[in-house]
Image 1 (tube, rainbow over the protein chains, first blue to last red):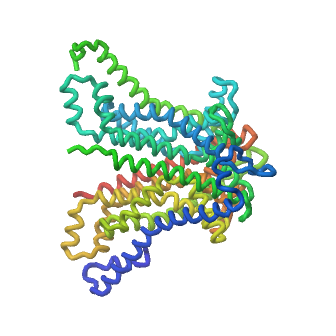
Image 2 (cartoon, chains in turn yellow, red):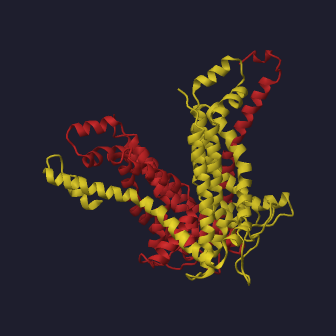
Image 3 (cartoon, each protein chain N blue to C red):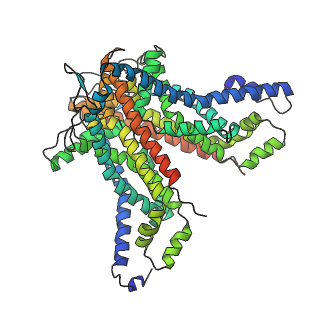
Length: 309
Length: 292
């Protein structure tokens, strides 16, 4: 951009031809900037597909999607992604169970009950919570959450899915609160006042009128938060363990798709080996899962939006 | 609200009260969580965070000799390069989308695409970086490849925040500028960018905070775990604060796992706080000058 600056700062008296040249050049440069994000998407899809296709040349896609054993390092290796998928669902589902009621309650408090001053205190705190890096939560899961979980459930592994669910819940909480609060606040005042005029209590108004009116936005916020939990990496890689297994017991040690990618990336994987290609095959599965959730959230927002005049 | 439960619902008022308390409890749990977490980290880092920790390289044997020097310098390099790449491209895209491509089909495509990119997990960007920069372009897992990967991670954030800032500039400013005969770029450069600057900078700093804390993409591109030097060139291997914290947390030695990692986290959090304080300062400083 800087190459064009001297011309751009030439003021309105610059000759017409020069101005037109600057306009054209800037238009092209800016178009290229905007195209960069499209190239990124194309790049992600191409790279994931090309390496995955090579992987599926060795392992059948049916075996990959339906196999219940994930043992890439044993001989012969088995590549059934279901255990990793199951681990991801366990962690994301667990965090949703914790974060959704908490987040929705907090959003209702902020939008319906809190004084403006209280909101000014609580919202920055949620922003700080949202800004804490994932790896920090992974650390906390191990040194702080895990001992507590193990003192309550002595049968739990040191690394278990519940640890990961708890910290991931804390990570997605601010997202649920801020998105849900925005939708709750956008419900018009007249709806509330109408309900109060009919003799409803604040509970009646909130649960009977405002929540239904804001439902699409709230659902979308839940789905976006779950998508975030599915893609959550460092905290889960640290806290949940490294044992891919088919279990729905949150006290077991498991492995998620993201944690597998981390574990494999740390080792030495020369290009062209099956180990290198699994990163891309698992990455593709992960990408499709989060993409589907994000598209679903956008669809809900678009289709179910209530229009108030 | 008084006198409402006359209609045969004797507990309506009580239920309403209890619901209010339950919601308040949910909201204040976030405060409790934050306080608890910060206190735990300070407690574990106490006595381990000193000047020696800042200036020393990592140590494989002695937790007392370990330090964050390589990680700190690596993080600063990464953030600097990421800013260099992400800000011009991100702000450029935002200008294009807001000022040049109104209501075109292309704009719709790019906008949907950016919304979807914002939801892609950072580890997937790491895989892209591995395939494209590290292996495809033969860059190796150096600072440049790391910064380019982080650029892709934060680009949607920069674009969306800059768009927001540009949209907040009143259209009267644009119309006045065009009425005086200014071209589109002259309007953008002399009117819109200065007016939108505080908003853009806030977004940029938010994006940089994200980049500073990201470890997953760096692990995915294969950034080195144990580094005893600071990077001298763009293709030198490197480590970064979140990566170093991750490696310490994975260590079997309790001193590394609990205390050295906590000290590293405090350094990272202090850097994050400094970045955000800069955002607040810049916003205040530049935000004051514009009066509409």
